[in-house]
Length: 414
Image (tube, rainbow, N blue to C red):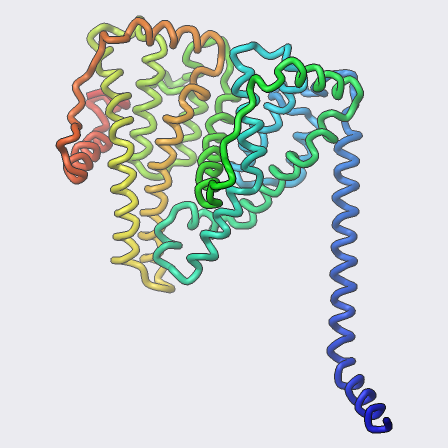
């Protein structure tokens, strides 16, 4: 018994220096977590109380579709990742419109519920998929430096995580934040009864892998950048503001100039925009130039996949030839290949979101519909790509097209 007592005392003396800091650390961690939760609760309460005006949507003095108090909250968080900023804005605008769906034109309602459902099903899946891919390939430098999404995640991990955190934050707290008066709750209930299951949609089932889900969600998030861009020009003009008269909407041109570093990808994007704008009102394009408009649209659409695959292989070649740890010059070459690949991916995203970006007013939609009906079966441009060509031949033709700046420097002009 005496020996056991001595052992217990000695053991206690030996363990105490370890157990005490652990206990202190645990208490400190618990206190930090408790304080953080209290801070979150206080922030949410302030956001709920911030706008309880008689308006169904709330105060929105700049008319950008986002309640001013919510916009101020997001601005205070210094969210710097443009993809999740755009995704968050897209979700908030759609949810606010769903509160009073009777005030939304019938033709726009389906897209509103599509956006809400897509963001809510995605939640944080996109960033979870990237994190999993990152951890799975942590020891594989070749994969990390030849995958543009992984490379972006390595570069902007903090901003990406913060951005997707707030996407999830607004999904979980949407009713408290946006239905924070009886009038708003009643309006939402009435809207929900009106639409019922009319616009119900499901994107993923239980068999959908995290990687597949994340890939689709991340593409949707990136596409939201163009949706956000559409908000910047909703004037009564058919094309939009184009001060330099080069046939490309100024807001889109500024976006491409700021975010695209690869000249060929940028040219493809500009060519697509230039041709799409002209196709919106084809009757006002000289007859001799109409075929060229549809040639440009078809060429860029068909060249997208061959050029994207070539850029992927180029990124891998750059890594295999130049990658050397601690070599800044080699790093820049590898980075350049990845940025080119990313820029070409954005050309595809631009095409996928063309209607949302360019037909963002009723007038633009009506005129484009009339133009498409007029052009149907009239203009069938001959495209120099066919199924008999191999990948190398297709790339050669498409690279020549993407490098051709035209006689007059205008996109699409031969």
